[in-house]
Image (cartoon, rainbow, N blue to C red; front, side):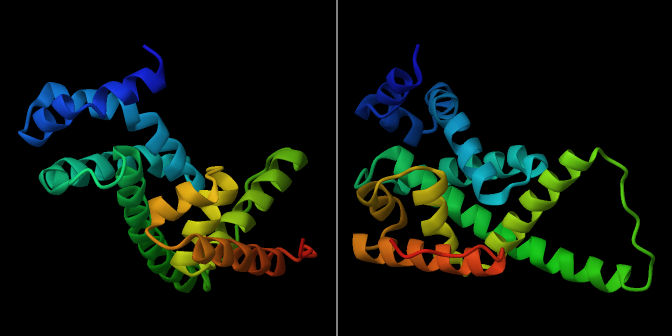
Amino acid sequence: MTTRAAVRDVESAAVLAAAQDGDRAAQAAIFEAYKDRVARQVFRMTGDASSVDDLVQEVFISAFSALGRFRGDAQLGTWLYTIAANRVRNWWDSQRRRRRREDIASSHAAGDTVATPEADFEATQQRERLYRALGELPDKLRESFVARAIEGMNLHEASAALGVPISTVSYRTRRAEQLLCAALEIPWRDE
């Protein structure tokens, strides 16, 4: 079954009602239909492959415990996107706290570097700089940027997923781009 067909099947009223009533098979169908999409979103928002599985699990635990309150005002995928964004927000907060603690602890120790091929090292450094810069953005700017630039959502989809007007998504995305370019020392051009 294709992903789109699986999504259509789990968004049917019967499957949603069964999942809301605690039917494990219906919940498993929802998980199977959306787990890869949520995992991609989480990875794009964190840049940390080692945290993806844990965060995906947290997203679905939260979703299934709140499924009884899902009213169907939005698509199930949009609702899961919102839950994932909230989980990632919490993850970034904990990462910042952990990084501060590590910085304090390592300020007294000598810096060790791992020997890797130069190209891999540079790519890793650039990726780390990007995700560090993303992590420094205010949550709302980061969420809009990831939804639009990384997830590829159009303005309407991002607006629905984030629960803000289209103009707000547009502004936040552009502001995030400006801040990221400044942090990465890349000239920003206003198109």
